[in-house]
Length: 395
Figure (cartoon, one colour):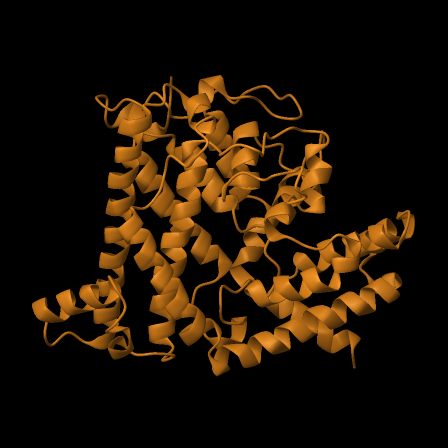
């Protein structure tokens, strides 16, 4: 059984955990394909994601700042790469499938609109009468339908395991309670991803790697942008200790190095806590295989209660001091206006859509279907393209 190139060639003593997701036991793809002799099924998924149009567009979709704020702040692309690195490292430490963890991590933000969460909130509000918008469900639409590169099928035809991780990496979805977005329900009608259970351990790791990367790198960006200062972090658990440790060891360290040294210590602390807590849960649950992880009824992967509390404190600080900072909100308010205006314009005048989208809109059965097409088109825009289209179409 080949788990990854690393395990096969560099560390012969390494063996996968019994509850790791096995590529030779993969549950297949919606459209049958012959396997690649040189890559596992999950390596192939990862490669298809990296080569997709949606992945390339992440380069010009912002994490927090809009694209013109500066070249050194994170985009959805750099964030996705950072999440994949953290996820892969954790999977390696826990003897899980690195390639599957990496694939889910790389795909987790594919469905984001331009302008970060402000863009998503605006598009969701505009589409509320037509089924709403959810970036996780849209990511699934992208990889199963909207990416049109292959002759034999729409989408990327990813494995069941990667699609499962993409659909429910944040936890089970109660279909009966109406918790599933419309776009997700539409796909599940033809391909059951068993969204009522927790996903496999690799997808759980990808979700927490997202948390680790998001919080720590937003602290980094916020400090470098001058939205707050290291002194403002004095009362923040874990963060204050990391900065104090660096200053004590390097009292004359310059500010950029201080920030980097502190943030890397924060990431390390969170990763080590996650590995230790997951090890404790594994010892308690003793899952025999990946099916046992799904049937556990609770997450196998997680932070300790103490680290979870610290993580929530960091989120609360970032919400008030960064995401709601006047320099950020003035840009996100503008971005929301752009998204709303574009949706209203295209819905009322679908003939102004590009040719391939216009044809689909003309063939749509009703206004609801046209709205979904318009939403798909806007969600795929980069920040700068959305600004450019808004300027051109609203003159």
